[in-house]
Every structure is written in C-alpha cells, then in structure tokens.
Picture 1: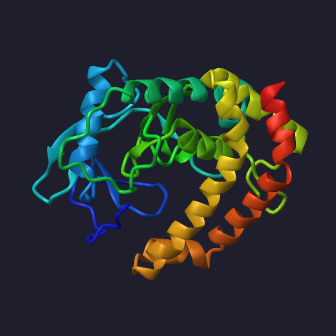
Picture 2: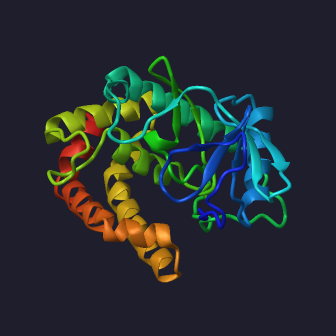
Length: 268
C-alpha cells in the first residue's frame, strides 16, 4: 500500500484511523484513498464481485480531482487492536470464515484486464484472487457480526490457502507467548483453528498445509516489511522500529513448534 503525499484533509472530510500506511478519509457516503498502479485492476475486481452477487465489499467510483480513488463507505465498525470482545467469539470466527469463503468463491471467475497490475505478484496455483490482508482491521462488523471486507490494495491471484493462512493467524489467532493479542493455550488455538476451517469448508488436503503456510506467510511479511523500509517507505520503517518484524518471527516460531498439534486438530 502507498502512503499519502498529503496527510491533510479537505473541509468536510473525516480522517479514518487504520493501519498507519495510507491516509484515508470519509467524504459523505464515500471513502477517498491514495492510488497505486494496481488501483484500476482492483476496481475491476470490485465490480466483478458485485456482479457475482458478493455484497461484502465496496464498489469503486473512479477517481476524484485530487487523484484519489473513490469507494463506497460501508457502515459499521472496523475491528482495530486491541480487538473488541465480539471479534473473539466462536460465532464471529465461524461467520468470518464463511464470509471469506463467499469472497473467494466470487473471485474464482474473475478475468483480470490484459494490462492488469497487482501490488503483490500472482502466486501459483492462482485458484482465487487473494485479498492479501485478511485481518480484523480490514473487516467491517455490524452488531458484532462480520459483514464486509475493505482495503483490497494487496489483492492478487493465488491459492486459497495463502489467504486463509494469514486470516487464521489473525483471527484464531495463532500467536505466541510474546504477543499481547489474545494469547491462548495451544489446545484452544487448535480448537478454534478447526472451527475456522470447518466454517470455511476447507478440504482435507489444504488443511494439512494450512499451519505450515501460515508460518511461510509470516516470513513473507517480515521480508516485505524490510524491502519496503529499504525502499524508503516510512510507514514500514516505523513498523520495524516498533518491533513488528521481531514479533512476527516469534509467532512464526510458535506455529512451527506446534504445527503437528494444529494439523492433528484440523484433520480429526
């Protein structure tokens, strides 16, 4: 994602809090966000989702005079850290897995434009269009229930498990003892991981690879943080200074250490 070159907001615009990478504002019933080379492709994806009957994503409405993309503002609450209790319930976990399944299924028929550009390079097998950052902070809740996804900048073709692995890390969550986010015993993490996979209707073969893919996904995230920081993106440099990379590495070690327990729970 891109940082905004102009952090100020125009009169009548309300800055929206988020992950600290983009400067995003609400203007009436719309959201205005910085654009990237991938924005036109993402807009085509969002149109396809609506045509496919998936209503859990905003529509795009082109670009404003300041060059920002215009998207629907989706009413509800976005779950930022520290997470509210409703995100942590079993019912919410199962509902978000079903939302992700509906999203992935809706993307399966998407044909990208011939000149499509993506923030992340496509990964094989390209079964679906991965959201790329399935997490509570990109999920809209109403009355405690997940209803929509936002921030599709990191969308890219790839395997379902690549997207689900990161979602499981964030929503179960598969965090280690050093992480302040909802620390759970491994047995409880395993139980919730099974709930998540069951609600998504994940097939047996993919279940075997889900924990290992989650560890790979965190290693990819650490590498991406450092690449972006080295390229001069201040937001990513700040994340590293705040110790996010060390935390992700510790969580990856936790997943690696307990992979057998997680796979056993997923398969039995």
